[in-house]
Figure 1 (tube, rainbow, N blue to C red):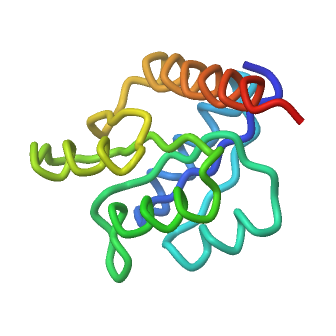
Figure 2 (cartoon, rainbow, N blue to C red; figure 1 turned 120 degrees about the vertical axis):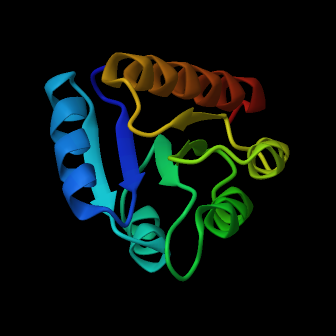
Length: 131
């Protein structure tokens, strides 16, 4: 898991800080963003492997942000996080290119495993495209 760079996008600041610390203790490098604008700024300035993206946020919601991320950074894998399952939104997110989704609060070990899987797919996709 060392070396995987994660961007956690969630408007619940306390949740983000606690989750970021837990992920960092497991060897991940974690940046946080409280919303879409901050997330896009981070993606412009940092190399990110996997985005953890809350679906329900004020302003630009996670589904809108997912579309923007996949359009501008198609190589970045995105794992959607939601506190309330809406099958239509989940299906839509997966169809738009999300790697997977997890319910909040996600089990940290399951989340780390999902991040690792997403990063593996990102690396496989990068290798298959060549230089």
